[in-house]
Image (cartoon, rainbow, N blue to C red; front, side):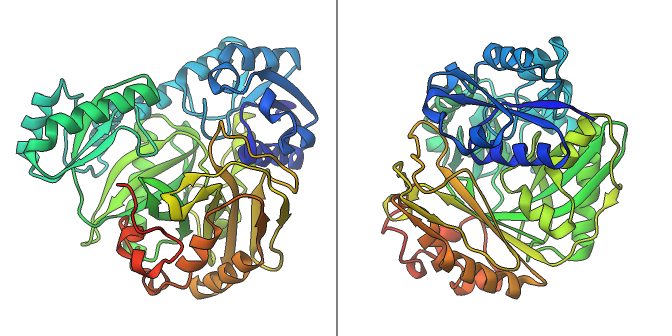
Length: 456
């Protein structure tokens, strides 16, 4: 069992891991930048260390400062949360080189899955279904044009080190390849320090479905069902639900087997998510693996009864999986990302002060947040303020609880995505469960909280 864990993150991620540590009797050490000294995670932790100024590169991304904070406070492990250094193999090695246990996968697995072209090769060898595309990095725009001609348009240019929609461009016309490649590569270089690109055949009208996994690194894998993450803006998720309304039991079993093969194919250990695209014919294709716990993990926790954050800590401390195979699912859960953004102005960030916060209560309702009345939302970091998660015995009950909980949730002082979600949970297409990754654009006319135009 771990004794003291440094949490190398901020916001609701840090709050979630502090609570998991305390549930297991583990001491939690928080870190904070000068802009975050009043953060809720700082108040909840047993100890807290300032690791630098507000710039992420000098605080939450500064490996030496984080390792030093863990060493000086006597920690035996580091939990990266999600975001920042959570998927950095270099940070894993910096921890292990200083005799700190990294609560997550080994650096080797992270490197394979972090480079999308290497991941495709590894998954092809493991027998996981892939979207047709390039197996190696593209050498430039001419190479991209050649591959696109073989695949047929439309195609997707994607960053090999990417995520969150950064460094991604949909190309419908050969004349657009050169400009799209240049823009995507430049964006990838600025976001990830790597401008490398690869290409996939674009799957038309897909759903984005992912499998949550826990693995022991020795071939044992527990698959905790799927989450449907198709409601997105600019390839970034807004709503997640599980089970997916689009998945039948045979397809779920096949996708779970593919996720298991993905884990065993890279010697995976700890928590991760294997992401797939599901086409209109029910075929699914691997797109990437997130080598960390994800923002939307509470959906899987509510439908399986497994505390994923605690299981991460237990596995890192030498524990074993609670089970293997596909976990039985119970009921239905939906998560809404309450971001400090203005949906009516193309999701423009809306930092400010939360003058009042009134959480929803009652059966089947959970609110994960680092906010409180009087909290000043800094403009330097991710806009996520809270996650509202609801559970019901079935999807209609979960939707009913979502309407109630969103109506009860009171946030004053900042603009958030709450009003958009109140529209969505009453919109017929979403209520029916028949939606794709183009949902927000397709349903725009029925969602008055959205502005007239939305950027691609």
